[in-house]
Length: 331
Ligand SMILES: Cc1cc2nc3c(=O)[nH]c(=O)nc-3n(C[C@H](O)[C@H](O)[C@H](O)COP(=O)(O)O)c2cc1C
Image 1 (cartoon, rainbow, N blue to C red):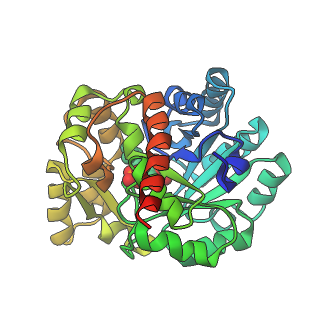
Image 2 (tube, rainbow, N blue to C red):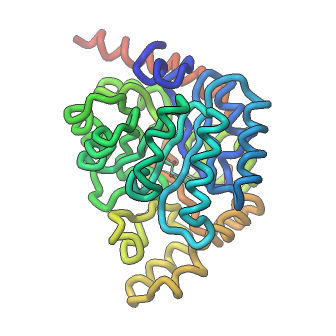
Image 3 (tube, rainbow, N blue to C red):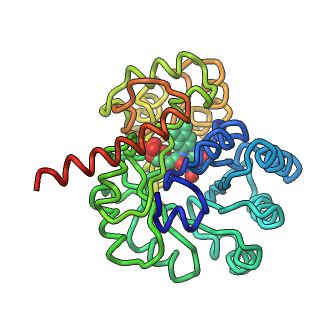
């Protein structure tokens, strides 16, 4: 396949894995990149520049193909702005293919010197956005591409609640840089639809979570197979609304508690013990699925198996072509 995204990343397929805290580590990133899609190494998994450097080196050892690094630019107790700046610099020194920024734009959160630093190093910078306005800002300050995430996405969708079906063509109308569609992408049919809307490629995370190489606990795989498109909820508007964000997670015991606390007017101190990343880390590994905020998208409703990443990517490309041919035959 050839699109502006395959040209930008130098990859075989315009399919990218999104950032996944505690999941997107060197093994999964490299396994995805080895299929011809683009794996993601999520920098938030690491507590220091040294730990992150080791992970980048390991990913380079495991794949010769392009991979990208997610840097989530949101206020965090564990990850200081200085540490995120260090992660960015390491990406430039090590010359990873691209940096995926999610949250506040690099120029305001890390500093105006960072995008020029990446350009100098030949590292691409993409921004995950949930509004047309943010996509236009990304283009203006020099990002190489945007990932447009509708509110179906797992993780931190924008509080505007606009779906991928609407947001992707709106952004495509307004910017000239390549666009990846995210949120609800699960197979070749979604990929064909996204490309018909004008996207140059797709980004998925929940679907990559449901692969053998993600290495999560068997109970998580069971949940991914059983839960439907209506089994996630949007929460944390009280905490994240000022940043324009909210969270989409599996509707489980913890998220029901979170909702109660929010309705009762609870604050960060009340919510933090429920939503902490350390809780989620434990659950991905140990499988007590009611016990943590598990950022899973509505695309969970379209997951019916746990393939290898290779099976998943190959099948997607065949399905996307078939979907387009079948659709064209109707005209
Ligand atoms: C398990 C999991 C963890 C995630 N962690 C992060 C993260 O650390 N940073 C981030 O920017 N997005 C994170 N996301 C959001 C994804 O990168 C992506 O935007 C979203 O999941 C795409 O929608 P989909 O789940 O329908 O594919 C996470 C998603 C999942 C499923």
